[in-house]
Length: 355
Image (cartoon, rainbow, N blue to C red; front, side):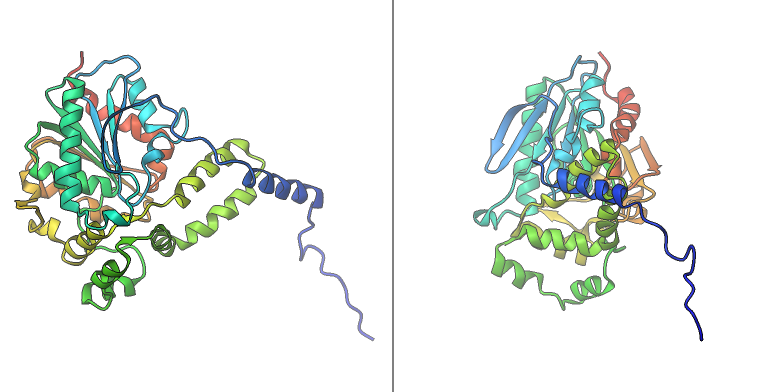
């Protein structure tokens, strides 16, 4: 008669006490209040509708030319000031720069007619003028992150204001390469996905839809994010960083309908920025008009914006001073590690008129 023999080593032995402690840690901090973000001292300089221009004074001013940050319309900009010691803005103010940040705010249904041309030619242009006047400087440095880099580049191509330096990081310029489901790209470019009808119905793109888009693009990351949390629940430093990142990831904002329509049709579908055909109001946003010193930063592990989407700007501008840098990091990791502030400082310090 056959007998069953246990297979030793086939199933790992669990330390149940350790596992219970791990899970109790997870439940504890997931039930706690959201972590604080935005630690660097700031003051409001200007406001228009939902948008606010913030000024972050230098700890000890060392440079004449201030930095002006332009962030994406998809997310909230506090990723740039998410925690002490790793904050991009804190790092730069500690290095002696006056820093300005245009927070686009969260558009409501009443803002459905705001397009990219309004954001760029009315909001951004006016904010830059205010920052120049407020700082007393003769020139300014634009710093754009992700879609904020696209917006900053478009603005720089039509700007009459004195932009000395343009810094763009993880920036989509060429929209032909696509990260995400192939059927999305095929459907939008063939007209099978009717963006115009969607915008006409909703007015603004709801934050849940924005969140869904990013989840579809980075689904494995969303899953592994929680897996890593569970495996490192005893590491308080990691947990603190995870909680801030998780708060920002889930804190999506609505997208003004007309702006999204222009983004989808003019940039993603027709790729007009690379072709030099994009119009902002009655101005041709041709990147060859950019003569400012240019610094482009890409992440080698960026799963959202590929290098081939960013690098074309190097050949499209007419700047004489151009630098392209690839960093071994991901799309958001560049802003979370404190590395971006150091990279920006290293490049822009010799181009900011040291006092």
